[in-house]
Length: 188
Image 1 (cartoon, helix red, strand yellow):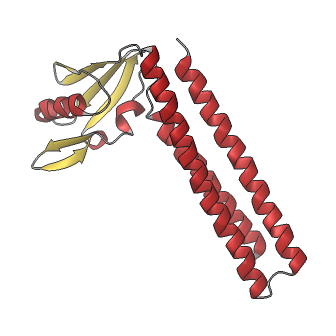
Image 2 (tube, helix red, strand yellow):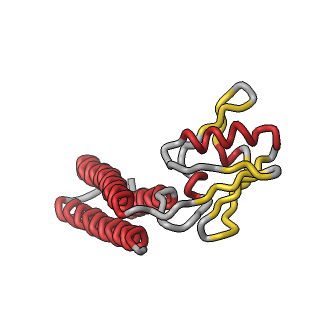
């Protein structure tokens, strides 16, 4: 085990934690329409005798700031997609148009915005938990490398210090991303 390689792997894992959080934030509804709003969330459509994800059945676009358009690849699935969006936890009310669905995105109330901020904080905390798990793996690797004589006592301390610095850097990044999302959400 090369210490430099383990540091790079730890950093890559921490980067994935932050990327995953950003991906989850894309699905959190702000005041603007975004295809990620219904694309990334698990909107499951019962069609063809099975359950499929919405993004595998349709193209989702945002032609206007407060409107999403869902264009099914197969027009016969329009009603099923409409039902799935209506029954999802998003609180959206799609309207069938010719060969597509128009999904208006209503203005968020102050109460709903506060609920979304709580969700953002919960997602950020989950990302920090994943980050701490990666940190623990890195620290365990340091102990293994010391036991296998790849590291000296001082080398282990330096390695653990590097892992902690990475953890601090990515924790700060998670905080920055969540603060920016909260600010975006609270803009009226």
